[in-house]
Image (cartoon, rainbow, N blue to C red; front, side):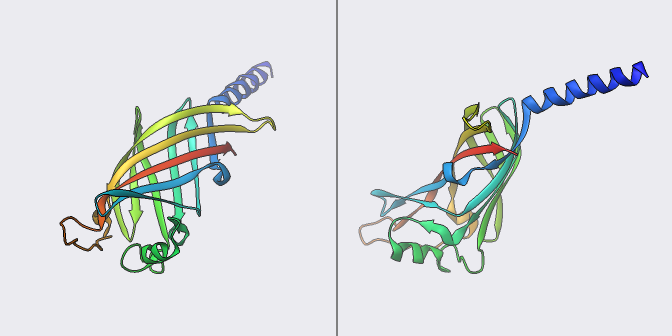
Amino acid sequence: MRKNLLVTVVSSVLLGSMSLFAAPYSVDVSHSSVGFKVKHMMISTVSGNFSGFSGSYDLEKGHLKSLNGTVKVKTINTGITKRDDHLRSADFFDATTYPEMSFAMTAQKGKTVSGNLTMHGVTKAVKLTMDMGGEVVDPWGNKRSGFTLNGTINRKDFGLNWNKAMEAGGVMVGEDVQMTIEIEGIAD
């Protein structure tokens, strides 16, 4: 009887302390963003974001154990309706055929987060740089954490090939797309 009581107490302490260090989180979309930048006519940069997204991750002592996210392509917003409609069309994202993009982490080593990005029906391995913001308990008792992911992809690797040559040289849309993903999550 004493032995069982001791095992129960020790197990409870270990399981309780593990929850202090590891936690599954849901992305708080009201405090997160999925953004991008791409060169326009090779002289300026166009910025945009996606307003429809969701995700979850497991975090242990500032180290990601998993990270998965989905983005609704039709929610693209660059601030210009005509441009956004063109980006949703078959020339670019083809949002009707490929309504979602997704990311599934495969590993984290130091500040590098590796994973598979699926966009426009193509899945490629990508590497992102993570800047950990930290973990806190908010005024309502919720455990929160936050971090930023940055990376660059070549849009043509995912079949987003549309472009126009310019008379003076160069092209209308750059191939490299800079991504910035700001994540704040609430522990489940």
